Length: 600
Image (cartoon, rainbow, N blue to C red; front, side, top):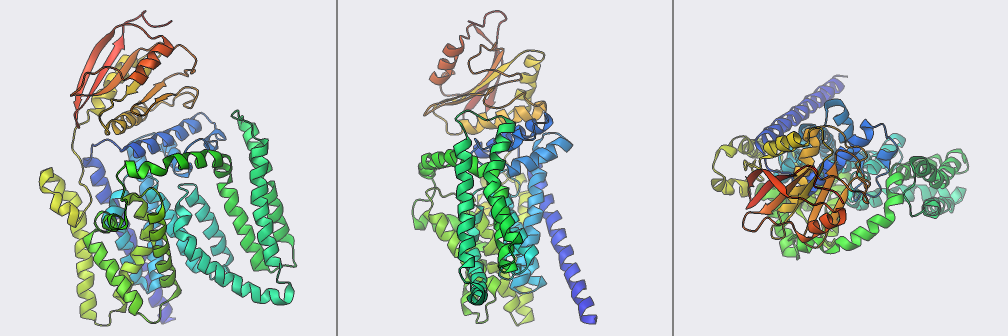
């Protein structure tokens, strides 16, 4: 009884330390958030806009419509989570920041339980600390991308996988498949990093059940595997057979989804009530069915859209400057992702892994997951440092488990002190180095931390105030246009668009394909949006426009935007209201049209 009390006391102590670690990481992130005034990147702004769209659906009571997002390139779970917080707090960048902190909490506690299975509670705490302050992980924990939330869900799924005991524990098995499904509803790459660990655990499960099948009918397992595969294929066929080219109504969409789920429900029901098959096998396949139910409403309708866009996007990585060979790929992992100190830790971890004789299952699964994920990422056409982030699920325990193997207490204390000193220096760097001139921070950035808060003034508040003032009480269409010569302009345009939505705080009526007109060509993207629905074939009264242009070029409208004016017959002289000088040689010009001169 005394040992049990001591164990519970130790467990409570380390769980409290992980919680303290989480609050410290949130404080560091919040300080960065307050000091950085740079525009969100193009992808980040796009994700924020999608979250605002979900908020628009919720605020108008269109709950079913909020699930009909299969025209989007990414699944909606993160956006839906953010939109729910928007309902409570109102749409803001701060709300989206706190959504990421929820996932950070999930990640740190998941890493703690993974590390604990590798050694003890102290190892678990070190594992959580590695996830909290490894440079790139800390940087991504306050940027609204999909990578950090999907990493958190992969870490939580891995915890359930290593605790399910070859799928013999029902609750852990069900939670593994459910969490993996939710992870796929954030980003489709989430299961990539769990493929090999899952295959290893599944092999153990299959072996144990096969021994039972020898006496009860060894083909049952294969029969149910074929049945589940047929149920998935049949559901896909039913949906696409019943779907027309036109966008179905909410009711039609709901009926299509339910009809396509029918084969899965039938298989699941047969498994639950068929007493001839082993209960553990029935529950395993029922959990698989639940996984498909979770992802069904997005992936089944979106399959044609995703396949077409993935094919088109196969060369994006080359255009964006991703690593193109193994040496560049390895250099990106070492210098941009792990950092120098993190690389030393994981190299030491690999050495200790190969030297250690009695490796437990969690270490083997972590090693398998890391190697498999690392190789698959290299084989993908797009390689970006962000895509490394889910490797943290395996690299964190591999980096610190060997601390528990050190027999000499003095050496263990000394190395632990170095570990936490580095963590504190990284955090203090983010807290205080922003007061150092930007050109003098590079050595610290490469050695310890990711980019510091940016203080460049993009005049967002002034631009927003001006737009709100001239649009008050008017039917207004605002045009954001881009110039050809600046790669940074898409970021500027997308982020200003997102800032306008967040700052105005009023949902756009039917902010979808009916009221958003998009013009694209090789060089120019333009966004037109309205406070009221604007049909693509309509004739909007253009009250104001915002043009982003290069200060080194003439601020004429690019050709695609000129074609827009021809299409909608918008005429008249512009009256310049205000002009703002932006970083990166850009300028923002706000103009209005004089009354009575627009229209056909």
